[in-house]
Amino acid sequence: MAKSAITGRRKMLGQNVSHSNIKTKRWHNVNIQTRRLWVPELGRFVSLKLTTRDIRTIDKVGLLNYAKRYGIAL
Image 1 (cartoon, rainbow, N blue to C red):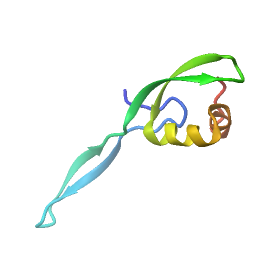
Image 2: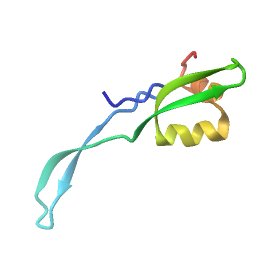
Image 3: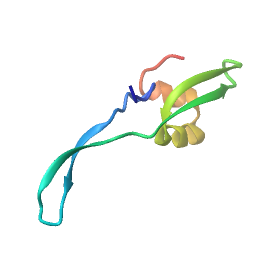
C-alpha cells in the first residue's frame, strides 16, 4: 500500500467536479518514493518509503530530527 513510513500519509478521498457541477468520487494518491538515505549519526544507510514532501523536508532538517517530530525511532 502507498503509505509514508514516517508520517503515515495515505491516499485521500476527494471528488471530481464536472462543468455541470456533478460530483463523482475519486482518489488523490500520494507520491511515494523508495529512498536509501545516509544517516551520519548512525553511520549507515536506511531504506524508507517516503512522500516527496517528506524528502524535501528531510533535506532541510535532517532525517533524525524529522523522525523525532513524528515519534519514529530509526
